[in-house]
Length: 84
Image 1 (cartoon, rainbow, N blue to C red):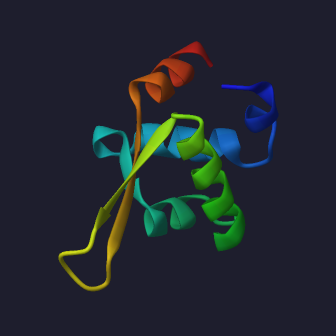
Image 2 (image 1 turned 90 degrees about the horizontal axis):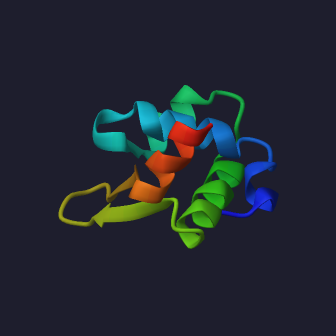
Image 3 (image 1 turned 180 degrees about the vertical axis):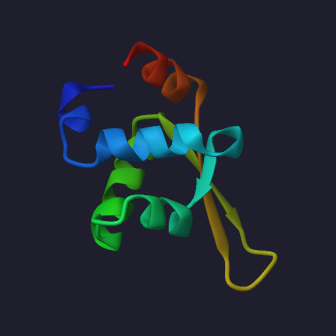
């Protein structure tokens, strides 16, 4: 993971909140509630960047309404937290 993503505001908080989740997994709304000052737009951007970097994976459950999106730390993401 490049330093340019780690130094962006909120990125480390998002990673750490995912680390706290059951099975390193959290829903978007849980992340938003846990990081109260982050806007939904910024949270969405950070999650997309982390997914592109392979730090998290996104799982979409469209079998129910509303559609549930869960984000999970990958092995690389967990290793990153352990380094930090």
